Image (cartoon, rainbow, N blue to C red; front, side):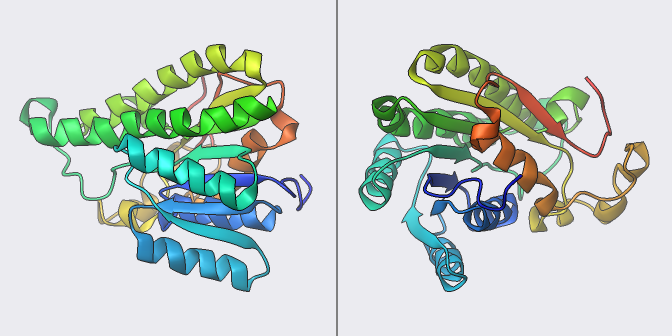
Amino acid sequence: MSPETLTGQVAIITGAAGGLGRAFALAFAAAGAAVVVADRNEAGATLLAEEITTQGGAALAVALEVTQARSAEAMAERAEAWGGRIDILLNNAAIYAGLERKPFWELDEAEWDRVLAVNLKGAWLCAKAIFPAMRRRSYGKIVNVASATVFSGSPLWAHYVASKGALIALTRSMAREAGDYGVTVNALAPGFTLTDASLGLMEDAASYGVSRGAIKRASYPDDMAGAALFLASPASNFITGQTLIVDGGRQFL
């Protein structure tokens, strides 16, 4: 894929201050996109936006609380005012770090609600906020970051798995509704990836699941960037409602 695949396009990436979001933001900027770095961690978003700008790219840091409709709307308004358009939304923000793994019958109700609110409702609110800008131009790419855990049924964090499974279902429904307006909606499902959050989950994170893959090595954030760029670029204009698993061949569907 051309290193300037997204030249002239404006891409919003939520949860972009760290982890996968940071890798996505850097990759999209390298591909020529003007990147809106959206995160509840405004200081982290600002640092990343400055880094992208220093490297010759264009970036805007925006504070975002994905569970609050007005915050999502304000993000969309700032992004369009800054870039003149919104071409791409990469719904990456999610609760993952800090979740204590335990059986479903021991999960706390408040934590369940919080995970579903951020991972599912947040993606819906952000898509809802940016859709008018895409509809006006009859073009847009929405990419929802789900998880390969949906297909393996990973135990001991049912709320996380449920939220990502529901996000795939939401992706399919949104794709049906958005197609008439020139907007595609797809999901990216990363396998276990070595982010700071993942490294904090277990002592053997670097080797976890490696033996089950067709490609026998750990997965890193940069491994997800190419798939995200594809789904966000004109190269995928006739693909919608799909889920792309990126896990080194640990499972085939």
